[in-house]
Length: 327
Image 1 (tube, rainbow, N blue to C red):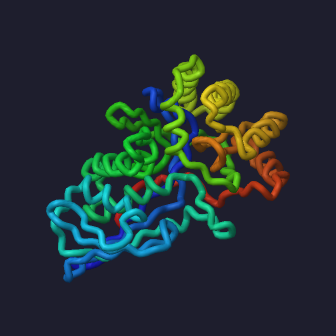
Image 2: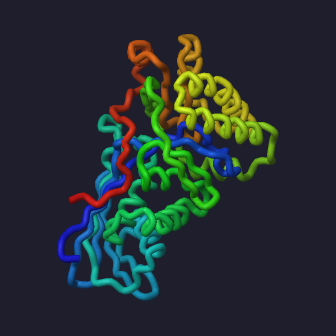
Image 3: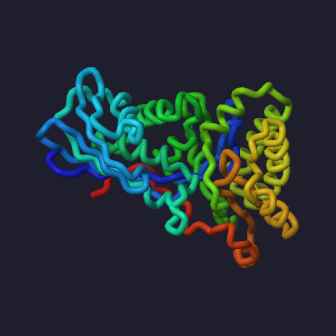
């Protein structure tokens, strides 16, 4: 590696199948054009140094040995380095300069993290940069392994799959199976941020502690139906499908006390319903992002203009570009 290698990967928004994907139901997920960036170049002194924009404020320094990473500073801040190094099995290394950038996932006014998959995106980008390769067949399982370790062994992998592939996908956890979908013609959307970040790992742990309830099975069934609606490419069918899906998601959230519709999502869902539009939360619960869906851009814009200052329309869109090496 004589020059710097720069790899980038997109964030994601889950459109259906949240939580149910853990029960082998399909999830529908879209990549967005917020991208994480990892830049790596060789050092000759045997030490690696890490800097980050958006990820953490401090710097890190370590040595890569046959027995693993030996940190001088920054271990707790840069666990993503440990997980990627372990997944790739780097071993003893000459040393590298590593720059991580997730600033596109940070709100510029509040400096709060916008919950659209930054940890998965940086895991994928860093794996690609280390390998010097953006071929999904080569780096895909490594990125999945690294991010699962980063998440404490929990999670479905849908965010990694989306960062790898880009575009609109259907994902199943068994074998990390991905099916590429096309966005339905005539279906418009706006992404809305609540202004409050949520911690997915805590919500998953809470779900795992709960006793299985019928609403969990019904959500899995509703997720299967939504996957069929998205596969059809019919925007009306997709919108109509969400009316039942959101009801099932609300019941599931209440049963497991996940707060999926908290932090303003319930308000947006009810207002959208009154206007014959669709709104659903896209995060694990307690904040993050939701999506407004409809057939008429004028109606969507009118809804967005009526929002209080607590909410923010995200300036992002579906991205067909997955992980890539930047030239």
